[in-house]
Length: 167
Image (cartoon, rainbow, N blue to C red):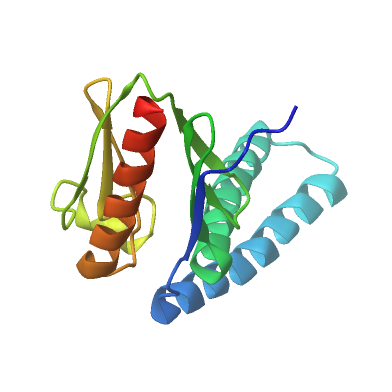
């Protein structure tokens, strides 16, 4: 059984080219360094346990950097309303999903994000102008849209949710 989609919007992440170039260079050089470490581990007759640990930590860091790099290049935020409200960030290695049931939804508001730390917003890891309040928590989406556009989207979502709750 498929749910009828009442509303769907995709918001493309605006690429920060200086950050994307920096992350791409870091990723490219990091892969070279990791390859050298792995080659050293394989080719050496004497094993050093510290290299395995360092290679593992370096691999984890490279995966996180690759995720942020892909988010900068092809990231998309989606809001889907069917039998619940779904907020999805995709176009990266690790898709982020949040589902809000209609009975958990409290309100929707629009505001410039002043709560998220600057470094989180720069890397595109958080923040947003459309704020969903539910169960005493907040979910933010719409990092790169204008306040005016965010208000249009929020009004439409509020109208749809109100109709759904009444009907």
